Image (cartoon, rainbow, N blue to C red; front, side, top):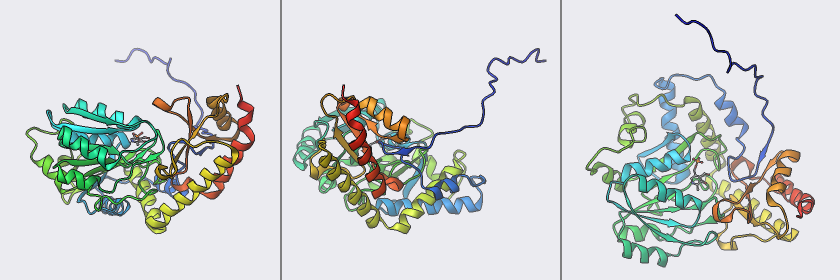
Length: 383
Ligand SMILES: Cc1ncc(COP(=O)(O)O)c(C=O)c1O
C-alpha cells in the first residue's frame, strides 16, 4: 500500500503561453497555418484504413518533392538526425569504407555517426564557405575506394549549396553508393535525386516543408536496397531498420511502432501545399526572395560569407562587421521584435549571422522586415 504522496514535483504551472516568433534562422521555420490545423486534428489509429491510405499519399508526395521513384521512401519518426542515422545504419557494415566530404558542421556529424557503425572513415575537407569540385571528389574516390560517399547538399552551417551534377556518375564509375543530406533543400532548392543518381537521402519536416520538427523523410533506391539485402548481420538499430519498417510502410502495413499520426497529418498537408504550388514555383520563390535579401544586405554595407554562385537560397550567412556584438544583436531582435536570426556554428561561431528564408517564411515581406531591422538596429550593437 502507498504510504504517502511526494508532492515536491507537483507544480501549479499555467497552460503554455508561447511567444509569437518569426523564425528567420537556420530552422525550424514557421509552420503553415493549414499544417497547424492538420496537426490539431483528433488522432486516429495508426492501422486505421484512413491512416494507412494517408501513409501512401505521404510517400507519393515525398517522391514528388525529391523527384524520385524510389519504392523505399518514407518519413522516419524522429527529426532529420534520425533519418540521417537511418541512412547510415542500414547500409554501413563494420569494415566498410565511408568517405565523408566535410565542408561544415553537418559533415562532421556524418563522420561521427558512420564511425559508430564501425566504418573506416576517410574525409576530404573544404573551408567552411566553399564547395567540392568534381575533381576533388574523383581524386578521393580513386584514393580511398569507399563503399559509400556522403555529402551535404545544403550546408546550414555555412550557407553553401553543393553543386551535385556529375557526382552520382562518378560514384557509379567507382562502384560506390552516394548518400546526400537534403535537410535544408527539400521543397525549396532544386533536387533531382534520380537524375543525379543519388542512392540514399534524408531530410527534415521543419524547413522547406513548413511543418514543425518531428519527422525525417528518408529514401533509398535499388542499389542501396541491394547493399542492405547483402548485409552479413542485422542492421544494428532496431528502430531504424528499413527492412522492418518497410513491413509497415510497404504493402503489408503490419505494426512496427505506434506512428506519430498527427505529425503525419501535418506533413501530408505540408506536402500537399507544396504540390499545389508546384516544385518549380517554390524553388523560384525561394531564389527570388533570397536574391532580394542578398542585394539588400549588400546595400546596407554588409558582406556575405559565400560567393554568389554557391549561395543557398534557404540560408544566408552574413559576416558580422568588426566591432559589432553579433549575439547581443540577435537577442535584441528576438526579445524586442520576436524575430529569430541565427548565429554562427562551429568554425563560423562569432563570425556570421545566419538568416533563413524557408518554406512558408520565404516571402518578400519577411525579406523587407529583416532588412529593415538590420538597417535600423544593428548600429546600436557596436562594442
Ligand atoms: C544540413 C543538416 N543536416 C542535418 C540536420 C539535423 O536535423 P535535425 O536537427 O532535424 O535532427 C540539420 C539540422 O538543422 C541540418 O541543417
